[in-house]
Structure formats: C-alpha cells, structure tokens
Amino acid sequence: MTDIVCQIVRDEIEAAVVLRDEQVVAFLDHHPVFKGHVLVSPVQHVDTLLELPTALMVPLMSAAQRVARALGEAVGAQGTFVAVNNVVSQSVPHLHVHVVPRSKGDGLRGFFWPRTRYADGEMAAYAELIRERLA
Image 1 (cartoon, one colour):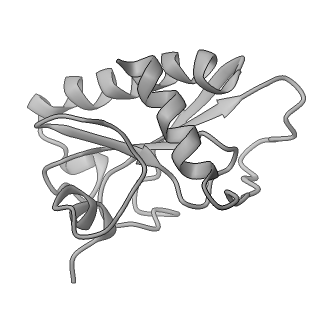
Image 2 (cartoon, one colour):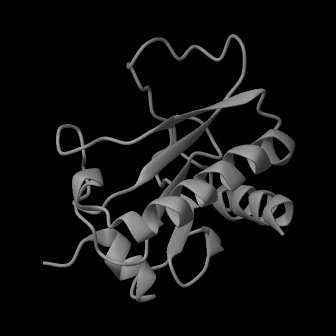
C-alpha cells in the first residue's frame, strides 16, 4: 500500500501544496495543530529520519526552515514548533517534518497536540498565504 505522501507526490490525491521541487514537497496538514501547520517531506520515499540519505538532509531542513520563516508573515505566527516523529507517533510511514505556527498564549503545552479543522475553502486560503511568502 502506498503512503499518503507518495500519493501527493504523484498527484494521485489533492493536497494544499505550499512548496515543491525535485527533492522536497511541503503541504498543509489536513488535521493541523494550528491553522498553517505544514508537513515537509522528501519526494523520495523514506520511512524515517534514520533512513534519510545524507544528500537529502540539507534540502529537507532548508525547506523546513523556509516554511518556518514564511509562517510568521503568512499567518501571523510569532514562532514555530518544528518536530519529527520517528516511528512512535509517526502516523504516516513517510518521513515528514512538522512546522507548526506558534504564538504566545496559543495553549500548546508540552507534547499535547490538540487538533483543529479547516472550514470549507480555508485550507486553500492558508496555502496561498504561505505560498506567497515562500515565493
């Protein structure tokens, strides 16, 4: 069975993609911690961080850094939380870096990650705001 990231890479399923090149794809999490939560993944299928080829480390983390920078202006975030689940709590068997917009008093405490949902059309609007800042 193909994982959801590989399906997004092959355009088999729709996603709110904010950044894509030959090595990396970044898209909005469909069930975000906070609106604007982006997942950054290598295009090449890699299960976990432990299996990530060294040649993909810089492109992956550079993309995560660009997304983190863009979220401030795009969604009004004061900062970001950047994390990688490695096997445990990794709901998709394809390496992905979470870039979560943060603001003081947002309610996120420790590793308790409440989830929210986008209203109809809202995901596309957030994706466009982030894409504009990444351009």
